[in-house]
Length: 157
Image 1 (tube, rainbow, N blue to C red):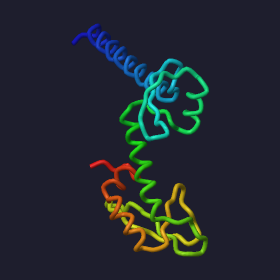
Image 2 (cartoon, rainbow, N blue to C red; image 1 turned 135 degrees about the vertical axis):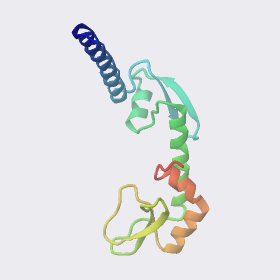
Image 3 (tube, helix red, strand yellow; image 1 turned 90 degrees about the vertical axis):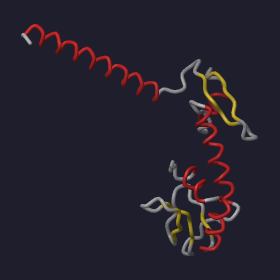
Image 4 (cartoon, rainbow, N blue to C red; image 1 turned 45 degrees about the vertical axis):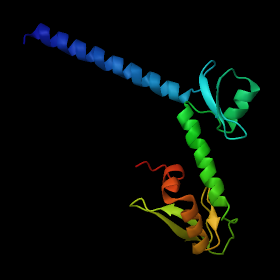
């Protein structure tokens, strides 16, 4: 390969690199700026149904966005509905955190098993607490470990 061929090869690689970089920057920008005016998005209604709309900076769009009720895809909205259902089912067995008392909550262990842990003086963000190990285990068995793994901890098999 002569010098001219090497230069042409390097220029081709540079052009390919710049195209990939441009595509990645566009992807990041799109991710950060969703939704834009005119973008199709999905939202959850008050009965758990999923609907699509075009973002127009209308007060409904803005209010949905403020509470995190705007999703890029129907699948994302469906996942959010199922997560809300699982949390509601778990809360049927829960009680508010009681400072200085044993508060059980559900955890995911290193080997991806659903288990429980005690908290006496520290609350966790979004925590659902149970008065006893028995109540926590009842919640786990009723809701199902696989649903808890998937919708609470985001573990996909």
